[in-house]
Length: 188
Image 1: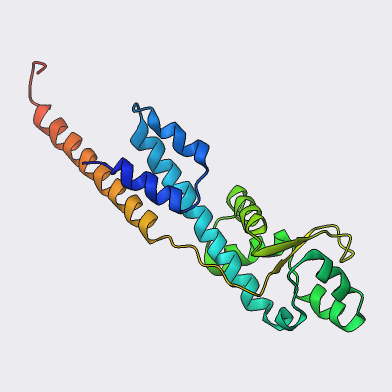
Image 2 (image 1 turned 90 degrees about the vertical axis):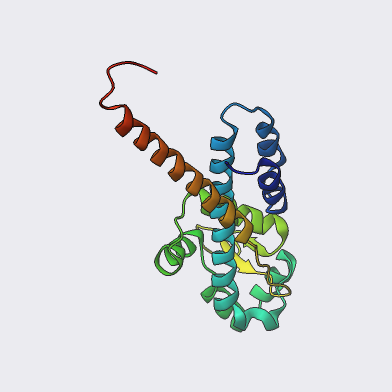
């Protein structure tokens, strides 16, 4: 038995998968393969989001007293020289975040990190501060310290494991059939 499509769609919907990607699951041919790929992709994005949130909230804890909830508030804080120095010092660029995720969390970056950062900015959990405000060539990211989001990945992990178990059983079955058919001189 393969992946339960209804359960997988529900898990993906609750994990924030794009609606357009779920509509593609209506076509039955190759559905399980596409579904497994979508689950793995969504799982890596959620893991990257959790890692980014953990990194930013941990390193930017001293900025909580500045109450940086909006870009307007960030601009006013950057006018104070003392607060500016602390804020700029604790504001990582995308490259710094990528290096940190790769070294500490073993999260592969690239497109996954781009999507994770875009979703975090869209949700309002992270602010993307334009580089011109901090006199940098790159945008920097600040955690909105009023709430720390956590993205649940347990159900997607279970679905990935189920899919791998099923694939392993199919490979084993094909291997046994190959061994059995090896001595036969006719097709069945």
